[in-house]
Length: 206
Image 1: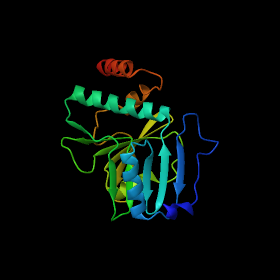
Image 2: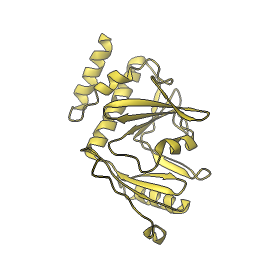
Image 3: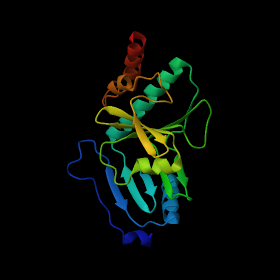
């Protein structure tokens, strides 16, 4: 780990909102050091999430608000797919990494639709504090077709195209899903049971 000692680190700034995640970044990290750190953290069951982009390595410790929000989004999405009879495969925060492009990360939630795939069809990211490493560029290199970013109570859909990710008003993967309606039911402090119940009621009334 001596190679990391000379690198610089940047914490969350004072401007970040309540519930912000702790984030640090180190630069010029060799690929094998990233892999060793990720595997070591997995073995120790650490909650740190790592994003590696061509030698820049962000370490993030999710806040309780972050974890609650990402879980609510996932459970509401799963509930919607159950209602629609869609086959959804949960891949969660499985590490995605590819040495050829020097990229690796763990999504907050990830899924394949129809059948399980090595690279998920959809990744979900909850953001309370600014990324120190560009996650969309990391996802682009890993070939994830669609990324949802939840920030300030809204979900933005990013769809992979020839020139990178493009913002869309709806999800091409799940075109019938009203993401604004889903986002309104992602309220930290709300029980999972009541959130799913109220979301299902809203779907029935829409």
